[in-house]
Length: 58
Image (cartoon, rainbow, N blue to C red; front, side, top):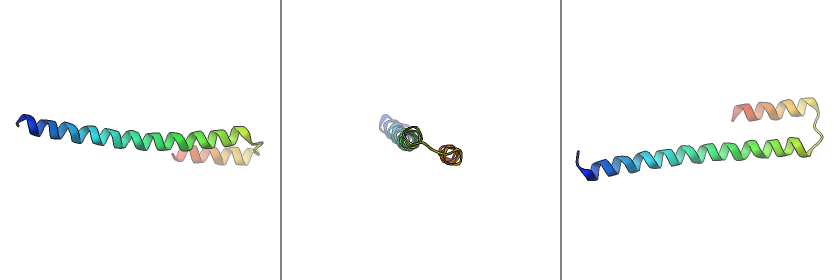
C-alpha cells in the first residue's frame, strides 16, 4: 500500500470518528435539555420518570 492509499484510509477513519462524535454530541445536547427541563420545572414523579426513560433511550 502506498502512502496516498494510507492517507486516504486514515482520512476515512477520521471522518468516521467525527461522525460518531457528532452523534454523541447531539445526544448529550438532548440529555442536557431534558435535565434542564426537569430541574427548572416542578415535575411530578411520573414526569420525572418519563424524562429518565427518555434519557435512557438516548
